[in-house]
Image (cartoon, rainbow over all chains, first blue to last red; front, top):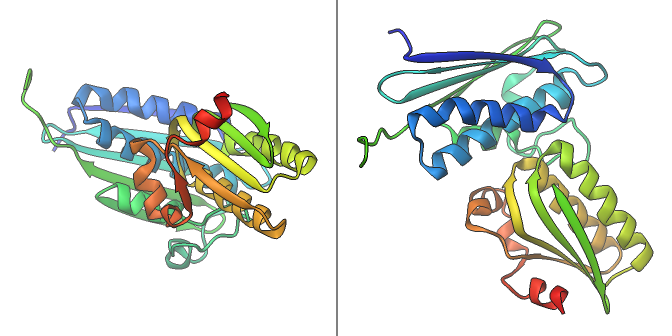
Length: 146
Length: 110
């Protein structure tokens, strides 16, 4: 089925762009009239995925982070956060809560947050080629003026 | 993102505002640690009343300050956590740390 609307964004993996990524996705999602809680969940999940690109995928380098978002008529939202960074050798291990390679000030909760704040999280990664994180959430569609 | 540091007695209060993510957490950490290294407080109060957004980088910031204050024999208090942060705070198990409501900001305002 064709999405009702879609958008693409690309930006350098500078940490200042974490806020930009949240704002861009929030602006796209606004048309679906999400609840405050839904919007907070989506912004948090996107923030985690983009931070992973910046902290891990492009650890000692600057690369490009790609975001695509699609919205379907039934309220299904799909967001893909993609990088062409170092990739993840062991995705299962990377997704374990508290596992981190980011040093002591990283909580190791990025994927756990994405999983608990979204309905579905899929990670595809190839070492040396990059990672794509697909986040999906079904928004409760409220009747207009309801 | 903003921070205001208030030292009163042995308590250092950090009034945080705006969005806490990986980018801003680094700045907040430097500000808090710099002030705490100078003041050597018994208690560090992190006041979240003005925080609009926080992801797991904020969790790392809290855990880091908790470990650091513990190593100095002090404690950390999380004050005025808004409802919008409750989900991530409880997910990370931080609600088991000392949580205070509406105490710290009144103290700091004096």
